[in-house]
Length: 404
Image: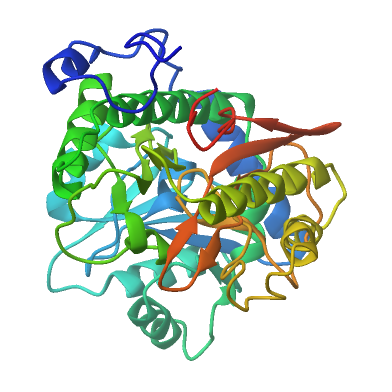
């Protein structure tokens, strides 16, 4: 029997939903000093294995990973220079030193530059001082940093540091998993509340604002990191359509959103019926559920990333959809890694032979699109364990029951 207490979609006013906003209990601990130091030593070991003398990490997710500094990239160079020996060097604009001191989580030799000076020349001078003859550069570094470094290093081009940075970041520690577990639990709670306040006529923009407000109230770093709310035919577009939409009775709803906790991301999609939808929508929903489950069951250490993608596609292709990226079918990869960046290695996609390993985290979202009609995406994340995979959040049981 459908009662207000058992209903998962609709039936709750916004005031009652807001009463369920509260700071999240039992918050996960931030990354500690010992773990930051272990990351530095892991990067040094990978540098030695690659025969490279130094690593330069620019502002962004990787700088936060190694130093705790949560700044995004700008036209001013902020970077970590790591050499085989000696204290890590942090390069920073002189006027930012006070702000840097407030967020830097490792002991470092801070070297500053004034607005009229060339920070790449400062990096090159530090390399000469440390007798480092080769440099690996963060793949997320702006192109201008690459070209200016080459000039400062007498024409020598830096190497790609992807293998070193991914080799550190790709497998998550227990502390990282705990932060991601909190972030995903918070976002799933927000999804539950958003589903309960649905009513005919509600606008997608109103829901986006509510979801951001809820994330903030629960204690996410900065509210929602993103939010996609789509109704009806707009669900056929993986990242939605622009403009205002209003919910009608008997429509499909797709909400994809996430937040961060201490920089670690959540990213969850729920897709369900508001009222009754036709049998074809239900059939595709159940096929999507089966494809998501098949991908999850294919995960175990040593399995290639592309094998997980193939497992999801096989389910859909046996039902007569596809093949490949042909529509109706699955238009994109089955999943992406997640951590300090919402999309990072490993990617569950054809051609990626990377073997899965314990601690790797990824989304499982083999979306099915019926062009110009509707799309179904169920997205949950898992982490690889010694004997398979473990969900961060339990998948949706049914099209009219989005939450386990």
